[in-house]
Amino acid sequence: MCNSITIKNETLSHACDVETLTETIFGPGRFIRAAFKLREGTEPDLNLSFVAEDEGNIIGTVRQTPIKIANHQALLLGPLGICPNHRNLGIGNTLLQQAIKAAQALPQNSYELILLVGDASYYQPYGFKTAPYKNIIFPWPVDYNRVLAFELKEGALKRVSGIAHS
Image 1 (cartoon, rainbow, N blue to C red):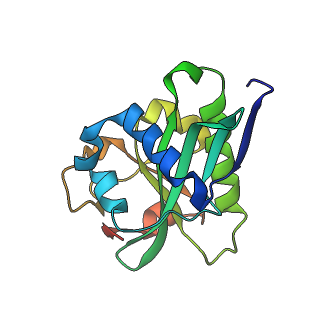
Image 2 (image 1 turned 120 degrees about the horizontal axis):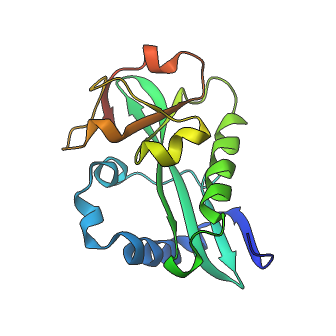
């Protein structure tokens, strides 16, 4: 990672820049994705969400939003995105690790797992596992092969099942 890049907690003042960045990265199609719809109307937890800055400009983001799966407390990770001209510098890696560490530092009764929809090949090295097929139900179309979870409590993937909602 470049020396001029800093990682910090997202604040309310970052909201517009983060939205502009996610629009650039994911385009207007992001609004119909199951993960976006699950986050809709719920604010990310800024204590668990981070931005990467390069000379004061937001060039990376990772958010974690509190959700429920049936009556289980969980976090929805995403979007994780890096400005196209700053990719392959380790920024996404650093943001993801920071988000996981922040969630792990919470009291044990906070959340059972971190959920996301993404590429297993990218997230598995960080400890994410493919969720049992349709054990966690999305109310919108989703590729269940891309539903991944990181257990914050041991055995959470065996215990947690039901409909994901905000």
